[in-house]
Length: 434
Image 1 (spheres, one colour):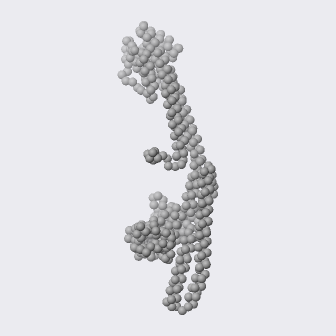
Image 2 (cartoon, rainbow, N blue to C red):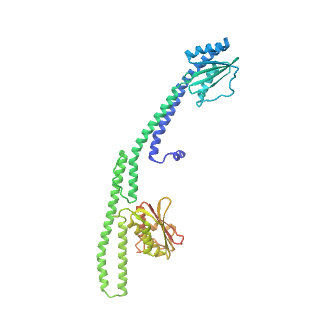
Image 3 (cartoon, rainbow, N blue to C red):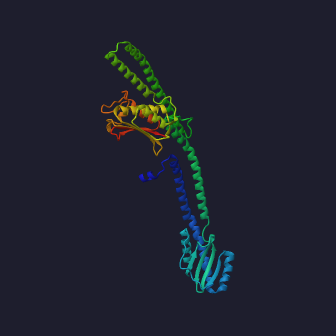
C-alpha cells in the first residue's frame, strides 16, 4: 500500500482523473480479453481451418496429376470461387527462416491449422503483403505458392473493435477531464483565496461556486475571514482606546512634573513616564498589526538601505533592484524592531538583503551580542516575554519586538527565523514571498 501511495497523483485533479480512468482502462482490458478469447480467436481459428482445408485439397488435386498445367487448372478453379491464387514454381525450395507477425497468436493459429491438414512441408508469411497471406507448400517438382486474402485467414473485425475501444476510451477520458476541471476549478479558487488572505492580500470578488460541499467550505472560509477581521478590529479599537485613555493622565502627570523643581526624584519620575509612554506605543503597534495598510509593490532596496542609514548599522549589504508586494509600513516597523534589538545587545550589527533562487526575499540581521539559547528561541516570539539570559524583548522593554516582526512575516505568508549568527550573537532572518 505504501508503494501505491507513492505513485498516486498528489493533486485533486490527478486523483479524480485516476479514479475515473483506471476503472475504464480495466474494463476495456477485460472486455478486450473476453472478446479475443471467446469470439475473435474462435472466428480466426475457423477461418484458418477453412483456408488450410482448401490448400490441402489443392495439394491433393495437384499430387494426383503433377505438372504446370495441373497447377494452372487448380488456380482457375480456386481463384474464381475461393479467391485463392495458386502458382507452381519448379526447382524452388522453402525459405529457411520464418517472419513472425506482431500478433504472434495469428501465426500460431494458422500454423496449427496447416499442420493438421497438410502432410507436406509448408511455409507462410503473414507480414510480407498488407492485404494477403503468402503460403507455400513443398512438392516434388518445386513449391506451390498460395496467395490468400487476409480477411479469409484472420477476422478483420478484431482490429476494428480495438480501434473503437481506443476511440471510446479517448472520448470518455476527454469528457472526464473537462468535467473534473470544472469541479476542481472552484477548489483551486478557494485555495488561492485562502493563500491570499493568509498573506494579508485582498481576496477580490471571491464567491462560493461549484459542488455543494465546495460551496459549504467556501462559505465557511468567508465566515472565518469575517470573524478574524472583526477580532483584529476589536483588538485594535480596544487597545487604541486604552492607550488614549491612559495618555491623558500621563500627559497631566508630565505637565505637573515639568512645573516642579528639577530633582533626582522628578527626573526619575519623568523617565518612568517616558517608559510608560513607550510601552503604550508598543502595545498599540502590536494591536494594530497590519490593519489599515494595503499591499503595494515596494522598493525593498531603498527601504532597507534607509533603515540602515537612520539606525547607524555597521555593515549594510543590500542587493540592487529588490522589489516585493508588501505592506511597507509594517515591514519597516518589523525591521526597525529587529535592528534596534540587535543594537541594544550587540556592538556590531550587519544587515543583508537578497533574493533567493526560489523567489523569496531574505533580510538578515546579525549581531555579536550574547545571543539566545537554542532551546529558548521559540519562547522568544511569545508576546510580553523577556528572557533574562538574552534578548526576547524589544528596545523599549515591552517584550513585543519579536512578536510584531513574526506576525508581520506570517501575515505576508513568510516566516521569521532565529539562529546563531556567524558574528557570535543572534541572527534574525525575515523571509517574505516576492
